[in-house]
Every structure is written in C-alpha cells, then in structure tokens.
Amino acid sequence: MLFKDDKQFKSAVQKYSQECRRQLKFIKNEQKRVIVRCIASPNWPGRIRANYNPVVKCLQIKMFQDEHHCSVSFKNKLVTAAMIAQYFEATIKDHPTMKLREI
Image 1 (cartoon, rainbow, N blue to C red):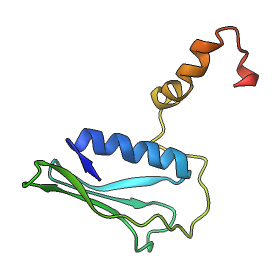
Image 2 (image 1 turned 180 degrees about the vertical axis):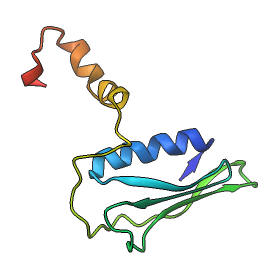
Image 3 (image 1 turned 90 degrees about the vertical axis):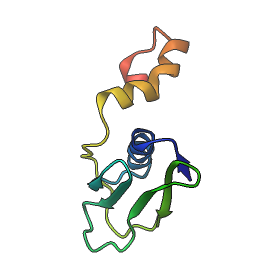
Image 4 (image 1 turned 120 degrees about the vertical axis):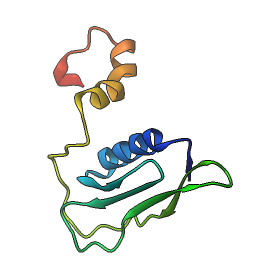
C-alpha cells in the first residue's frame, strides 16, 4: 500500500487498530520510516513497517503480518473520541433523534 505522507499512514494504522481491537504502538515515528508493533505481545514477529519510496515519492508498507496471538484489548490509546465521532457521524446525521442506547 502507498500513502502520500506519514499522517495518512498513521490514520490508517489507527483505523486498523480500531477494527482489529489490538493496541498498537509506534516504535519509530519519522517522516521517512515508521514501525508499529502490538503492545500485548512484544515477541510478535509481525510488525508494520513503512519506508519512504523515492521512486513513487510516497510512504510504502514494506512488511505487514495480520496474524495476532494476543487477546483483544478494550483499552486502546490510538482510538480517540474524534475517531469514534467520525465513525458514527453518518448514522447520527441520518437519524438525529436516535438515542444513545441504540447506537
């Protein structure tokens, strides 16, 4: 996968962390190199690595393994209130009188 910059990549990692319900941590967080790993299993060999590719002038994922051996985490620092609001924004706009329990 290709990303125009590190901000777009970080946003994708946050969404992935929300979907897979794993708490991920940015180990290296530079403009041209980003490495992410799972907090629950530090020995997890699979990490998400992205490096800057000068040919296409964007950030490219070099390694990604989706296999996890850790348990699901319900405390995730990458998932923020803004992300949750964005996730439910379309539903709330379609049904403005919807109650909180229905969400």
